[in-house]
Length: 615
Image (cartoon, rainbow, N blue to C red):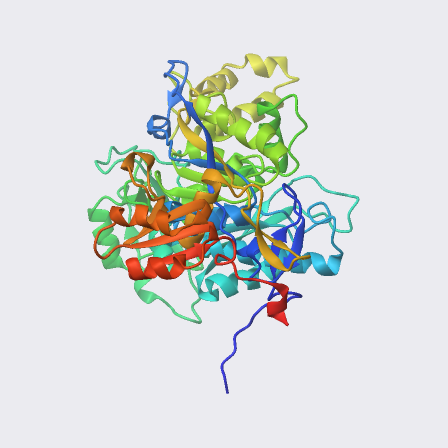
């Protein structure tokens, strides 16, 4: 019996989609061999945006991130995500730079709602959306490095289908986890059930490779560590030396002994408990000064855990609360702060959410990709974290008003919201030394409660003991910490116009009006897999692929033209001559003069397609 694997099947799965209207999520079903689908677009480079890093100020503290060299090898593209991803994987100059070299991909694709696909009925929406995502995910897999990961952000409409689709493209064994994000904390009382979460499906290119390089979450809370006994190993905290046990399963007699504290007390384990270690191991730990009996030596034993010995970070968990990474309201406030005169972008994501994803899945200098830029959060956070990035946006109005404008503010240092800064930690006030085990946050809460308890009691407020307690627990905030000072830059580009089209009336492939000049040369080179030659290389040819040289002619290929080209190649090299018209006998003449050479008639030899082929 032939082995079969689980697959997701949908209407027109064997078909392809092309855009039916520029700048909108509107598509037509076509055959996968249709030139409108097969044509590789190139990128047209526009302006380069560069910013300057702001100087430091004594008003703030600065993190290590603020001192990183800002990245300027970044790409912001206006265009359809499918065309952009195809360009990154197929245009030789771009493929060399990006294929197999992207460390992290985060996508927040248009959720499959009537707002995104207003022209389709529900039974078609899923098919259109799945086909659109399948094609793009296939490109993304090629772009990912072997130790890279993809994070797909979804609501509850398509997440179950996307999970199966990702299994099909990346392999079920490369599934990492499903992150649940608490996107709102308020209740939606108009709904049958108030939805408060989104989903982020995480897959690796190769799970075994990714597991070795993924980063831990930073340990922000080391406030419970202190060093009251001046241990040379540095600050430590303590945990109970006892452990619960079930005598029916294991009596653990070796852990039920009497120990003597430095103060002379003889202690047995509390009822229902045993000591954490055997007596011999306890003696070893005690000799190594790893058992703490309190400052007076009379308390029950506790095991010391040194900050220098704990794991550098925390293993990421899959439930991300609003308090940890923010909510949709957080992100809307971030956008409103950047663009106070504009209506808030409908579905932005908070910068702290992207900060966590980018931290876990990449390192400074790595490439981060987002094929659905929207308000530009992914690129903005990647820039602030010292990553290189590539992002694209389909809708020109969104691109101009939000994406590009936001990233300009980022590199100019004018975006000081989001993860650009962090509030200073609460610390003990000057001259105050908090007791062991009492953090500054604990002291602040204590003071707050004490103030409430004495609010209506004037005598209590004057009590010297109350005043002493308030004085002993006084705290303050440290300086605000700056993580981003601006700098770096990015290249702005847009997807080239189509050079090839299909005319249904003539049932043949045609050149478009835009197929002229440099646009035609670059399109032909990209679709034939040739790398463009630089103008300063003084070649009569336009591009090269190994030992083959390409010449694109917007006109007639003649024998005279071949005679002009032949002297410019060496033994073992060949010519590919692409022209919009070809004189009789030219093909054979070129083959005879330079073995292995050929003539490409445009557009017929580029895309041989007609509806009649399907009959």
